[in-house]
Length: 444
Length: 170
Image 1 (cartoon, rainbow over the protein chains, first blue to last red):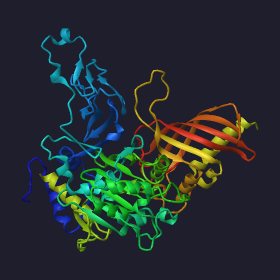
Image 2: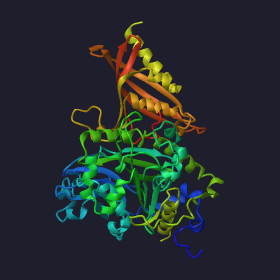
Image 3: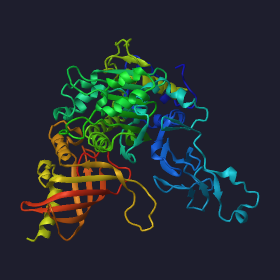
Image 4: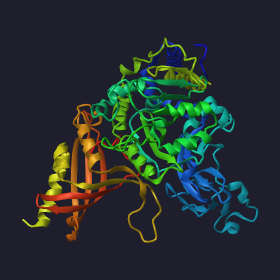
């Protein structure tokens, strides 16, 4: 009980001790997936101090372009100013608190509050106050009443992150060695990525950590959760296909990746099945030869950033009859709404300089297998919601769940990338690493 | 029975097939060149001319052709499609049907049909349910075997979907 912190109830503190003690033994108590008090602590200790993914630069390419996004429960207008600078402005009028943005996306030079008419330029500065002299006198200084910017905002290869903590470490330090794996996607083309339209948004009665764990580490679920697609010949016939890969975590950071190649004996094209011209361009754009060589052998790549961002980049095809391969890329934010409830933001992305036919087909590869109607993801959300429901029951919450897969594995000394890598993807190593970081942040 | 009445009957018959999970038979009502789309809808300001707002070009919840719809149906038949197994209790309420005048096309006579849709979804033994409202903008094509759905665009009345997946059809 040495770690007891002020401000945390004895009940919660004891529960966190239980989580902390269990991690190295591969035991995670179910209550962490649905608990109101823990939810509040997560909001305060994790989502108010972490770099949270907000938007991609390609969503707001022109001056004045904006999208509305959330960090914890705060609405932010992520907007490109006339000066080209990307900002995130709290969508709350400084006068009396009304929201000043009335759309999820668009282009605006100014945001005018519908309550009393205070008007802000798209860099957040207050420029219009109705009857300013009569109402507030001649000493009113508009410079003091601009929209509040998010405390920190940084961009990595087009990915816009925000942080509510002014004291947070720089994004680069936060990301650490996971950059190598992010770059396998962000630097695949010298032109970078672009979104294919706005995100799908939908709610699921589950916990953000359950969704995240699946993308971070759970290659083991594919054989049963996604068996329907194996039956149809859409996923590889070898139900253990996701096992043949490398699982990598970044100690101390909570981030992780899964890099899956071709199952033994399976003839799959190199480089996710991307068109050859795209693979050629990547030779020059990848920062290192090791990244290019790794990309060449990759068929499925997932990267998850602590706390709630994932991307998934698998070889696919638009339907079961399509000849050839059209891989897809989706970005995710697992946004917590309340205990046992999340909103999923799901984007499809593609290389900016990909051929037009490919952009059309990759959208289909995405929509038919992932996202709100995806035939893989439908079954994930169904299952996640039941786990979270069970985690709220008085008996269920006391169960310690099994995170022991791969506990005895030794790291792979030959893996060319950074982080701690295991040569077998059937392991919960990334989840254990995530939970270590998770408890550490909750208790600090 | 005139063709308009037959078309109305077909809409109700389709709803029955979707309610009862008779998806293989539902496929029989679709034209082989069907374009079936559910665009993402977002909150937008009112445009100067009013009208339906925030229907996005380029991103969808569903963007299907006959092959992909057949794939989704085949998946539901595997016995491992957990999202709909056990199946949801679904009810499709089809109202405000507006049938356009038939137009000759190279593929046959086609009618534009707009209808309002309310889908009720209840799962497992819980008393809660989800409701999704939408307008369907269809094109139905007449064939000697009956009316076939050639195009459907579903204008959802939700920006953020209140249900955990779209494992069913509109």
